[in-house]
Length: 332
Image (cartoon, rainbow, N blue to C red; front, side, top):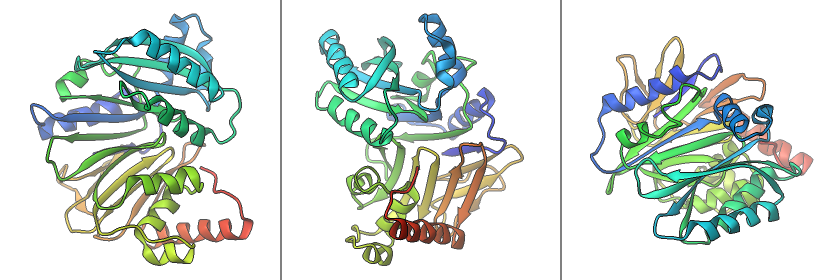
């Protein structure tokens, strides 16, 4: 499920609307519940102030929040020392660090906040930092980003017991959620440092990550090249393995949904927000057209733009054409 606030004003009510919808759907007694939100700036202002830091730092566009899970069986102290060293090595200044048992009790939940010494190739550096952190098998990074945070637990009830999730300052304008269990047809995968991806496809996620983090494509371009063979060939790339059944991804300020079969993805438009779901939600939900991508682009100024069908292809062609002409990377 994805829900996007039309006014682009972060509210706790928006987050609660998604959590309430998940509760209405029902969920497995044991599975996997993941929710991705915009960085809750007001909540982090409070966290920084309580830690003796300047709370206004949380309003910086390059303020980074990390959610890291450490195995309960591991010695957390030397691991935390190593993670601090890695942050410094990759050019980040650590401002905040706390650790507590995760809401499901399976791991230790480490929260960090930091600023980059410089913003050059910020997304790529965060991607490489995450990979370096996870070379330790006791470490799993849920999110490390300057745009979003991810909370996860085994069940929705456990997720709701997470102190941040129950905090009134937890607010977002875009919320992406996934509830799954072993053997479920849809799979969740963290899409690098950029965000979340839910899919049922043969396409390698690492191939999409390579397009974004190594080759410098935006999510919209990467998805077009990954799932449209003609576009891949025109840009000197080998088409990725097909077919896909459902692909939903969020990367920084862009989100994309594609379904190859009817009634795989649904859209419901309400006065306050738009829902995109994998099964009908609400009486006015409409099935997305099979094979036609739907994209959401959120600007730094707080404007949202929906691109479907022809408009999606026009935007993708414009970006790829400008890339070839200017020989420069597309800005995220």
